[in-house]
Each structure stands twice: as structure tokens, then as C-alpha cells.
Image 1 (cartoon, helix red, strand yellow):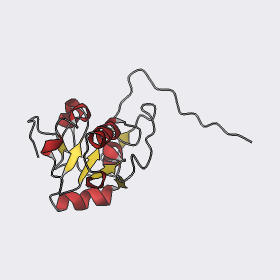
Image 2 (cartoon, rainbow, N blue to C red):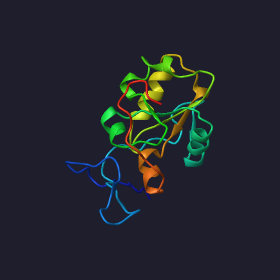
Image 3 (cartoon, helix red, strand yellow):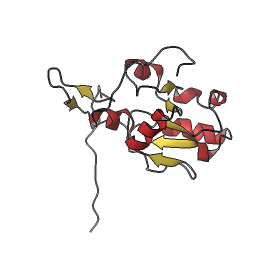
Length: 158
């Protein structure tokens, strides 16, 4: 017996990031209709990490890269994250320290922005062992009740 699993069709105005429900602290509305589910492992040598890894990385002042476009970043990001939008990843790889692993994230498991950035970096010769992929992204970060803040609009932010 073969089973075909189909997702809910995408709505016209899909909401890519969970939105707080007004007057209900800790409650978020999630749109499950957008994007394409991303694999757990993006590329050989690139390790997928979870929230505890992201927190430890931030506590050690190691780089966490928000690879979403600037409009998403400026609306809300993980505190301490730097914005390198996915279309600029390869051209801005000199902003990364090849001695320290960097965690890349985007909107969540169905978002292709950080996978696209990671593939571009790998194609440009960036070492896979210095790239970490937080697949949960802003979706999981927010729905787990972790803090977010507006991102800084400056190009070389930290």
C-alpha cells in the first residue's frame, strides 16, 4: 500500500513567520501553508543544530547569521544575529571568520533562504565544517518562547 502525503495548499497571502496573538502572551498564530520542507542535512560536512546549540553559540559570542532578506531581519531576529541576506552570502563571505563556525538560519523548516546561502558559500569554497544550519529558524525560535528583537539596519551589524 502506497500512501501519499500532501500538504495544505498555500494561501495567497501566506505569513512566513509566526505572529503573536494580541492579548495572549506566548500564543502565536502559525501559517502552515507556505514554503518547501527542507532536509535535515543541507550538505555533506554541514551540521544541523538546534536551539540549545544556538544559545550556546550566542553565549560564547560566536557568529549567528540571519540569512533572511533585510525586511524580515529588521522586523525581528534572534538577539545577537548578524544579517547576511542569502542572495549576498558568497559575495560577503569575507565578513565571516573561517576560524569560527557560524550558524545560519532563516524563517524555519520550510524556508529555503539559509539552505540557498549555505550552498552558495560551499560553491564559493567556504569550508563546510565552519557552517552550521539551524533548520528550526525563526519559526521554532519564536514558538518555543525564545526572545526576538528588531534587527539593526546597518550592513556590518553584529
